[in-house]
Length: 396
Ligand code: AMP
Image 1 (cartoon, rainbow, N blue to C red):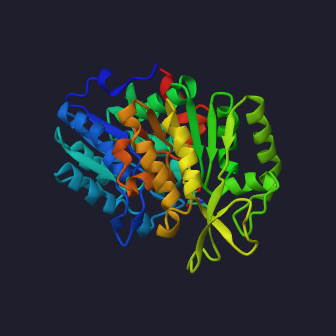
Image 2 (tube, helix red, strand yellow):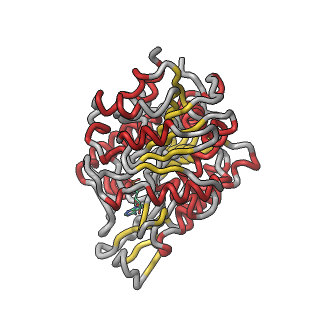
Image 3 (cartoon, rainbow, N blue to C red):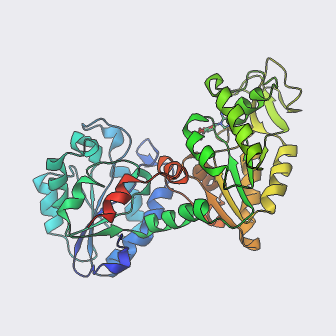
């Protein structure tokens, strides 16, 4: 059994909490604060219970040594703004000075530690590093869903140093929605997939096909399926090593009577970077010298009709290169259709990473039932795999 936050007496305790503040940063400013905002309910609850909090996180891949561009200082500034109070910050997560700051914390105070991955011990799950990190609290709470598929010191190694440990509201919510999606979705269950790579989503596709009623495929990965069906795809993204898997998936879908729907029209251009000539064409008429970078209106409407009749919608992967306004229409169109789900009692679950960024960018995140904060972790869970950091918390 995993303890939830409300099962633990937090009054006057110092809590070490693993959070996921792996956020994009440019010129010392946080570009997307979704993950930081998502940690606030758990933080506020702990502080209101009279606890003091030590927060730890990784940011990027600094490979075990200090690198200013991966410092959590900008995150600390955003966090202080969101909490509307000052927080303490330590330049090392395991130094004596940082332990002293923790010892001096009063109830209601927050101490953010510098990037865990400035020390090799974090990703190596080193016992010495884990014991030094564990000195920061009497209670351990994991609320970092984005790293739950990793077995690191801050989410697995530290656990043996704590009697009182559990998960925060963010992880609790992620498990509730993502497990429900694969175990007990309200029917019809519609899965919308997109993005560039098929490879990372293969396990999910095979796991979900027997449970889904419809699978709608857009984004760059659709072209590998279209090629597998014998269509000309011009200069569009294709993974030739996945053609046989694509054929197998098309076969599996037929075998399970699952409606697998591919785009019927796409937005094409000669060049992704400076689209002089942007056209929408049928997938049967793709010129050799152009590439497809978004789904067209006919496809948005076709997908939209199926989505509107769903009970549960699981969406993972953008429909086009949404980072460029010229090719954001398909992803925005699908996001707008999904955003109407609340009114008609649909459960709309948006998988992490780029799709979460897209719905946040369109200002539609709050309209979804759940937007996952974890890319890799949500894919693992939706593929039916266990998450090591969650499994480790189940042990006494
Ligand atoms: P993934 O990590 O596989 O989910 O891929 C996400 C990326 O796929 C985003 O950065 C999109 O820009 C990209 N993407 C979506 N559609 C296309 C497309 N038609 N061609 C190339 N890239 C695409």
